[in-house]
Image 1 (cartoon, rainbow, N blue to C red):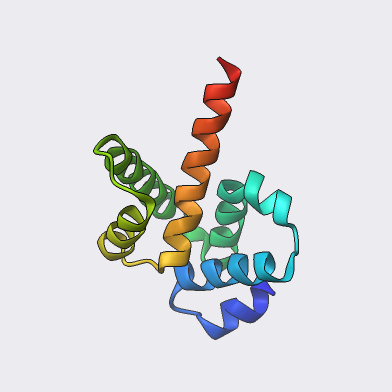
Image 2: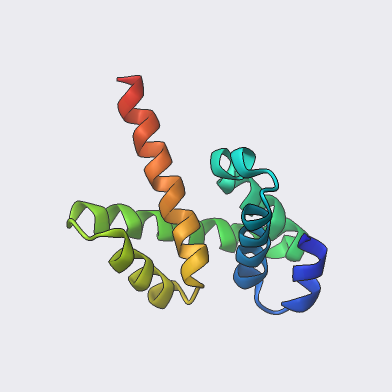
Length: 114
């Protein structure tokens, strides 16, 4: 699945990764794993795209997570966050939603561990 998307979108890493995750979820592949380990999956796929840009990708991911947290603190709903993140970071809405899902999952885990 990933190799196919990487060939389809050689210059657009975020789109290739987002499409891989979307297709896997749509087909029911690795649902629990993707939900629980999206960040790790993303890092592995980024490495497969272009290893020399890993640090840049990690910084970008950190910036996206920080922006999502900031929007949530301002009370923005997920639709607005998805739109803003997509535009600000030039990623697909699906890819933005994966980040939002990860932030929400981490927040739930934090809250339940208290």
